[in-house]
Length: 108
View 1 (tube, rainbow, N blue to C red):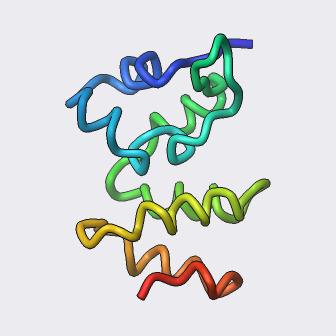
View 2: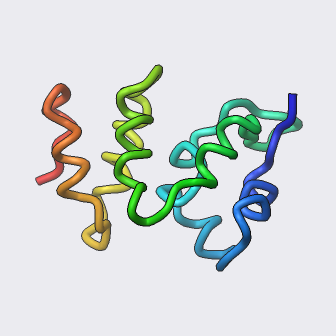
């Protein structure tokens, strides 16, 4: 099985601003939640990275919905909740739409 570190995933996707990418979990594969750890580093499977690399600004909300509605969805929803706490988060309304099943996760 092939594994990607965060930097390798960034390179696979085609680059961009590395510092912004490394510091913005919502732009990382699976919201920055790794599939595994290897030698203390977060890594993602090739399947995860390849699917994430196809995400565009126009399909980001669909990708996030797939994460939340898939296996382990509550983990992703909680991560979205953490990310949405900042006033500058552009996805607050979207996160609240995904949260009805877990009202304690709603952002006010």
